[in-house]
Amino acid sequence: MKQINTTLGRIDIDRLGKVDIHDHIILDGSKNETIPEDFHHIDVDLISREVAAWKAAGGGAIVDSSPIGAGRNIELLNETSVHSQVPFIVTSGFHKLSYYEKDHWLNSASETEIAEILFAECEEGVLLNDSRPHQSKRSTTKANMLKIGVDAEGISPLGSKLLNAVAKTGNLLGIPLMIHTEPGVPFDTLVDTLESIKFDPNRVIICHMGKSLDLELHRALAGRGYYLEFDEMVRPSPSLPKLASTIRSLFDEGFGGAVLFAGDLARRGYWSCYGGSPGLPFLITSLDEFLLDLGISQEILDKIWIENPQTLFSN
Image (cartoon, rainbow, N blue to C red):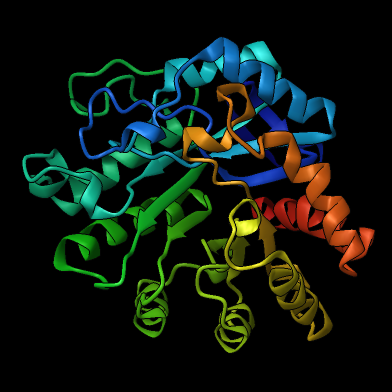
C-alpha cells in the first residue's frame, strides 16, 4: 500500500478516511501584509478543538493548502495536528502572485533554484522560515502536495517560471498539484501549458470549480483526466441545489471519478471556534444531509470523500 507524508508521519493511503482536499487550518499573516485580517487564524487550542470535532463527526485527513509565503506556519500546523490527532497533508509551491511582494525571492530565483527548494520541502522537510529558504531550519514534516495560483490574467512569465519549477518537482516525486483558479481563467491555455510540460493530468486538481460553474468546461477538463475540486458549499453562491445538479450530471456522464470536495475555510468567519459559521464539521454532517436530500446518494458521497482522494494519491 502506497504511503504519503503527513504531519503525523507517513500514512497508508487507505487510512486517510474522508479527505478535505483543500483547506486552511492555520493561516498566519504576521509576515505577509497582503493577507486580509479575516484570514488570520493561529489559535492552536481553538482550532484543534474544531478539527477534533471534524474527526469525531467522521472526518479524516485534511490538505492544508497554504503554500510558501502565503500564511503557512508549519510549527503551528504540527501542533494543531498533534492536539487533534488529525493528519494534515502539507503544501509546497506558491499561491497567486498578488500574495507576493516585488522583493520576494521567487521573483529573482531561477527556475532551477526554485525547483530545488520545492524538492527539498518534499524530501527533507518543510522550511520553518520560507522567507529565507537558504538560511532556514526545517520541520521534520515533509510536503506531499504542490500548488500554483492562476488568476484571470493567465500565466505571466513569472507564473510560467513557477509552474515549470513546480512541475519538475511533481514529475520527479509523483506528487499531486493543485491549481488555484478564479472566474475568467484561460483554462484552454492552462491545460495546453500543463500538457506541454508533461504533467500527468491524473495528478492535477483544478480548484474552485463552483466559481466557474460551467458543465461544458467541467466535462472538458474531466475528460482530459483532471480532478475538479468543489469548495463553494459553505458560501451563498452558487446555490447548493445548483452545485448538486452539476455534481449529479458529472456522475451521470461518467466523470464521477474526477470530483473532489473541500471546505477552503480561509476566512476566520467560517470557523465556529471563532464565532463564525458553518464550521469545519459541517462539511460531513449537515452538508452531507443536504446533498442526500437533493438526490446525491451515499455511494456518490463516499466516492467523492474517500475513493477519489485515494486514487489521486495513488497515481
